[in-house]
Amino acid sequence: MFPKDFETAFNFTIRYEGGYVYDPNDPGGETKYGISKRAFPDLDIKNLTVEDAKEIYFNHYYLKGKCDKLPFPLNVVHFDTCVNCGILRASKMLQKAINNLGYKIKIDGIIGPITLSKIELISPNILSLEYIKERVKYYSHLNKLDKFKDGWINRSFALIRNFLIK
Image (cartoon, rainbow, N blue to C red; front, side, top):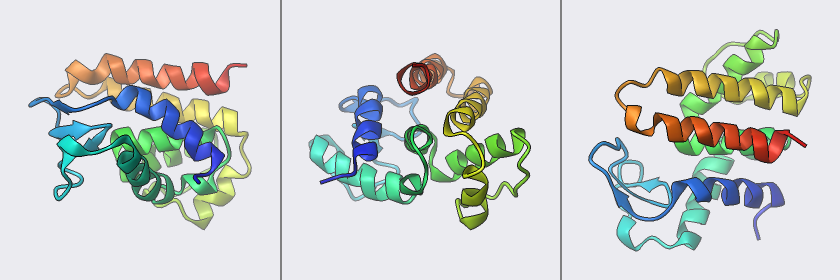
């Protein structure tokens, strides 16, 4: 049994990560449900089940990304960003968002006690919106992956529509 917030995050992300794809323009290479051969070279991607993907997402993205330590809906935004951009880059985006809101911390990609203590001081919705702004800014500068840019930006706005606008 997975935590409710993980289930929510997984259900959002899996809608965008889809089935089996082997696009030569995708730096992840062969992927299924968003799990890439590059990230998991020993995995049989083609025969990956959605249940296997869910386990990988929980252990390798939700827990390693410290999403379990974040309030809702920030944990959903961070999880989806970890999956799409990698944990280190996602964590740096989160820290940049914290800095943008006036809480100065080191941008090192480590979601540790200092970052978590600043997160506690900020409304999860406001921080989530600022984080999504950082994410869209990052995508808008990706020239090599231009083919995917609009989809990733739309996905970011979907986070706002699904979790931040009531």
